[in-house]
Image 1 (cartoon, rainbow, N blue to C red):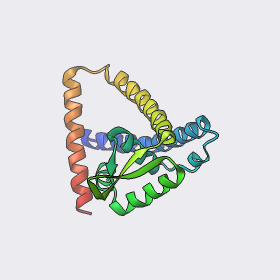
Image 2: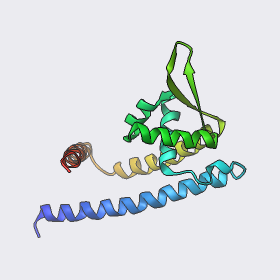
Image 3: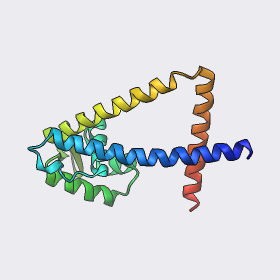
Image 4: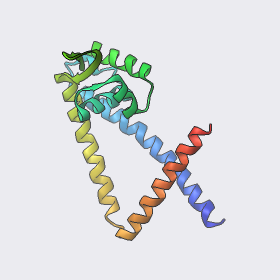
Length: 163
């Protein structure tokens, strides 16, 4: 088997393992949020997409439907549905600026802030693990890895557009 085929096989294996791990991580994160907020029934059925919207609002502050859709990579109608659910759950508020009554903005409530903080802690732990793992490589190896990942990302985006 040639080296390119070995790299492809390893790439596929890594993607499958990452997908499985991501599902387990998401389930664990949602379970930990539910346990940390037992008196807050609204988080019992929180979806990972709703969590991403909370994360985006928490990171950017006051955002509108368009900016949320762009940040998360979904349609504006999908964001409208998700924000409606989060509004009902009391995790976000909607408001309008005095000088712009056409546009609707969102911000986190105290419950939303709690979910956001928990998610941030979870992500920082994952980041520390990855940075620790990467510390075993030289700068030149890391630069090469960065180039491969950037090129692979561009290639994936091209192939998605063509499908």
